[in-house]
Amino acid sequence: MKTIALIGRPNVGKSALFNCLARRKISIVHDQPGVTRDHIHAVCKLGARPFEIVDTGGIGAEPDPDFAEDTHFAADVAMAAADLLLLVMDGPAGATPLDAELARRVRGSGKPVVIVVNKIDNDRQETLLADFARLGFDDPLGVSAAHGRGIGELVERIASEVRLEEEEPEPETAENIPRLAIIGRPNVGKSSLVNAILSDRRTIVSEISGTTRDAVDIPYEYRGTKFTLVDTAGIRHRSKHSTSVEVFSVMRSEQAIERADLNVLVVDATQGVTMQEKKIAGLIQKARKAAVIVLNKWDLVAKEGEDEEILKAKIEEIRGDLFFLDYAPIVVLSAKHGTNLPRLFNMIEKVRQHAARKIGTGELNRLFKNAIERQAPPMQGSRRFKILYATQLQAPKGRPFGGIEFLLFVNDPKKLSDSYQSYLSARIRDHCEYPGLPIAFKLRGRKVA
Image (cartoon, rainbow, N blue to C red; front, side):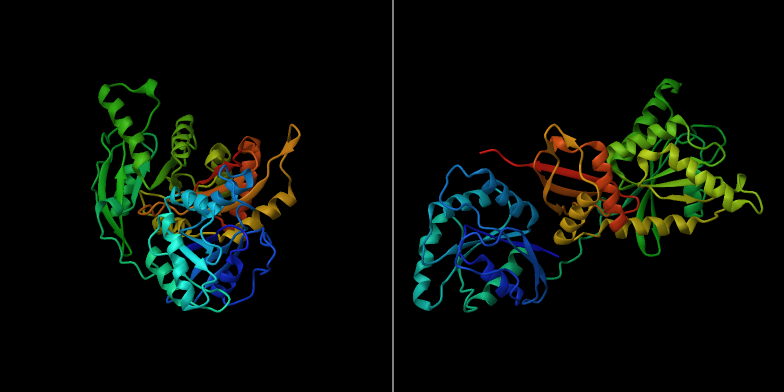
């Protein structure tokens, strides 16, 4: 759902306009400037498709060309969280110096902007719009939140600016077909897994380590969803590379991790996690890529009547060894016998579905508030880390397995410790799971005027 933020200086009628779009009296409307302090969210259903609207506090109590700290912060929050900015102004008051400064800032945001001139209660007041044209935006729109005048036209304008109508699907190209890289150290069964998936001996399988020299791209379709499988050379420690050919093979495998949408890390169940698996997992973590761990050759480990106990112990062992890749789910299978192969693609589909999930801004801020009340950040000097506002960033288009990233407006980014960052990530996963997907925080501190 698209997010539309209402911003402007105090007492221009943002809250009245917000209530008008929401068709409910949510924000407090009062003549006193600065009544709205927190960000208030609602859904507007006046048009063909709904969109989220956000009411913000008034920015700047009086004209200030330098913008005080709080003014900078409020403007940054609104601009970062929204797909479209409605810059609301007071028609009878005319374009003030603070309006001009706000217009300059929103123009620099790179977001689409609509100038909404409020308190245009009748046709005679339409002439007041000319004063706002000098701010450099096309077609200022006159409305009256108090009387509902021009609201329908505003909703249509919003729909055209952010394309609320059903978008046509992007044409299918090799670039937007998800790439699944099958990676791991030599002889763990990567090529056997690819062959089992394809039900075809498309790649060479051998007991000799290092048989696969190149990263091979193979088209594949599973239940109507197209993928590109990337079979890679086994990644060994650089000190063990016997030839220059093998050095380049490993380099291509490492590049495959970077260009993959999701990495399938294959581990030999008979040998468990070695130092090389840990290094490969480290490359995945560093690249912030989606991942699934495959525990292969399970048929050589399981014993009749003891499968469940052995499996539980083995998974706990893998989790302990690859603790830094804890977001990656584990699928146990046998590529040789084709056992449990559907589970792998069911898990990949689950990861894809979760990658499209977005936590609402209000819900997210309540989640962080509860997490901090449950366990406060540690003191650093005389201050604690504080989250002032949070929003989830949209995944880049064409990345169906893109990582989950949150933009946090904070008092001081340096106050967030690694351990507390892990704690916040865990609370997000408690709420929304996000299997197979890395979670990242982008921090923005208060700007000092």
